[in-house]
Image 1 (tube, one colour):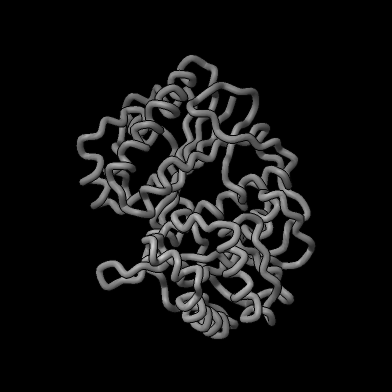
Image 2 (cartoon, one colour):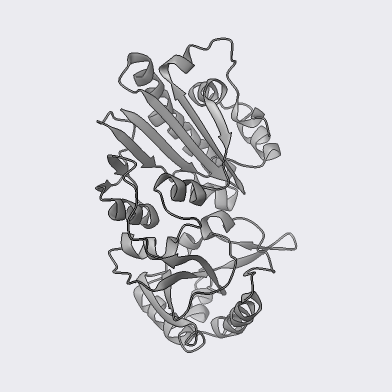
Amino acid sequence: MQLTLLVPGLLWPREILRDTTFDLPLPALALLLGRGHRAALTSEEAWLADTFGIDAPLPAAALRLLGDRGAPDDASWLCLDPVHLRLEERMIVLDDPTRLALTTDEDTALRETMAPLFETMGDILASVPGRWHLRLRTPADIETLALPRAVGRPADPTLPGGKAGPRWRQLLAEAQPLLHAHPVNRRREEVGRPVINSLWPWGQGPLPARAQRSFDTLWADEPTVEGLGALAGIAVAPPPARFVTTDGRTLAKLDHLTASLASFDAMAWREALTALEAGWLAPALVAMKGGDLRRLTLVASGHGQALQVTATRRDLWRFWRRAIPLAQLPP
């Protein structure tokens, strides 16, 4: 068995990691970081594109629509997700969109209001409430930041960039007062729920003709990765609660840490990291020492950073290489 763990939300700024993990025993993670082969990555999205043999940037919109059991045609697609921007210490920060929990009726009402504004750009559809896809009439010449990478970080006022960036920033600015005055948001505000006050365009591109079958088993509960699995002809199932052995090459996307990363909830993140150590990393290293697991790869990301660490059984016996706690990783 060869196992790849895709773990967004593991990497925090160094000063926060020191304060958050100083008393947290994570021997399996530290051993993997110290004795494995480390390599910096551009981003999780770039790693996925390269691993599945797709030209970057990753066309997340079309893949996500496919993963949500939609049927993207040969047009170029763009995610246009409803989001909540919050004021935090004189900065505008993108909140975790999963906290919005839009109902079907709310989603429909908001899209009906937004559709005329974006009519010249394309048609808006929702695969599920809160996940909007714009079927572009022509490809948009813009530069954006993938929503998963932007969550919890200050919103860049210069995005979208690119040749068509000014027009798109104007459209988003026009959308904001319409959203502010919308009855859906008024009702949400009355009951203390976060309002939808902007839209986030990202993940543009057409659906690729095919994807490389880089894994035999794919565990994920996230539609973009599910779309990649469908395109590559790999059956996708939710991740098990903890490490189990399988045949062949397995990719597991574990999203335990993402919610606490977006909210900077250090206690929840510590609990999730402890569960990752006990449920996945520690038993995976035991399986590697016993010969049931031939290779373990950890792909971690968070706060604009991404890292890949790969280890084999032989690497674990490199006793001259010390274990490295997460907070002491070289820059």
